[in-house]
Amino acid sequence: MLQWLAFLSVLVVSLVVHAVTEPRIVAMGDLHGDLNNTLTIMRFAGLIDQDNRWSGGDTIFVQTGDVVDRGVDTIALYELLQRLRDEAKEQGGQVVSVLGNHEIMNMVGDWRYVHPDDIASFGGKQARIKAFSKEGWIGSDLMEWNLTAKVGSSVFCHGGILPKYSHDGIDGINRRAKESLETYINEREDTYGLFGGDGPTWYRGFAVGDERICAVLDKALMMLEADRMVMGHTVQRDGRIRARCGGKAILIDIGISHVYGGHPGALEIQGDQIHAVYEHGKEKLVASRIHEEL
Ligand SMILES: *[C@@H]1O[C@H](CO)[C@@H](O)[C@H](O)[C@H]1NC(C)=O
Ligand SMILES: *[C@@H]1O[C@H](CO)[C@@H](O)[C@H](O)[C@H]1NC(C)=O
Image 1 (tube, rainbow, N blue to C red):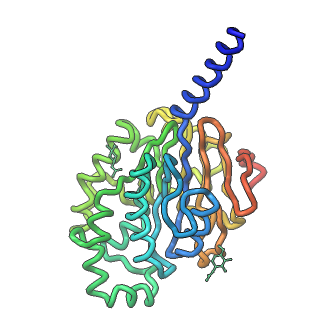
Image 2 (cartoon, protein in one colour; image 1 turned 180 degrees about the horizontal axis):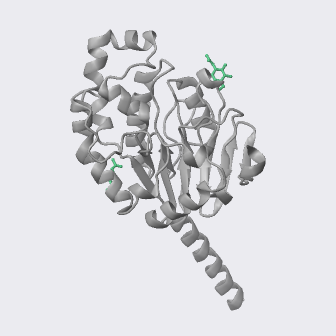
Image 3 (cartoon, helix red, strand yellow; image 1 turned 120 degrees about the vertical axis):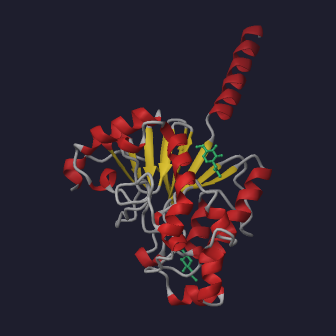
């Protein structure tokens, strides 16, 4: 009897410890102006209820940028993320946002991918410029977003982080981005090269490179003290979350927006349990072999 009680208490304690140390992380890639599909995914991934209120408890939700452009639901999506951030906090959860290249493009006034109806939804060009300025309700929020985030043992970013940006870790990248973003917006001067083609918001190498890229990723992950990198930015046209480099690179831009076919899905990480969550249910994520996939 006593032995059984001892056994049970060990079991309960280890379950509790497990729950404490292994938070549930749900990550979504590029939303590109599609509120409806975003809400659909958030619902089946257990983040929100039927009234679109946070129901994820202590889940950590990570969105890897490119909320804006191509689609037209810019206002509703940024409002949603800001509201859920507060609601999640009340339940012990968290909403983590990292900047995509399209957030930064909108801040610097590069509106190549802005839909005319999106401009109209703000009440015109001037109003939209103001909203994305660093004093505006979207811009002031984006100025607080990081370029990258480490949650548990996973690094999240929009494009990908090369070793040359990794020497002083996640905090170093975020600090330099904070230091230089305003200058970049005002003068297009990219002090640390963080906002350019091979910077964390634009780089595609880990998504499209051949096997040799995995050694580069390994080096970056070692410097960032992380087990894997989770990235958006490069659309997986089949609508399926892909793992490469033995699962160290996870690609979560699956074309959620109807503009890219409207493929609903999210990534779920809990400890070493990694799943893709689709409308029909969860699937264990299995890394593909790069030489077979290309
Ligand atoms: C909303 O999204 C769901 C699936 O994500 C789709 O079946 C439905 O047709 C969409 N509704 C609208 C109004 O686009
Ligand atoms: C940005 O990242 C730093 C660490 O790199 C962290 O201290 C800070 O809380 C983050 N800010 C937000 C808004 O997540």
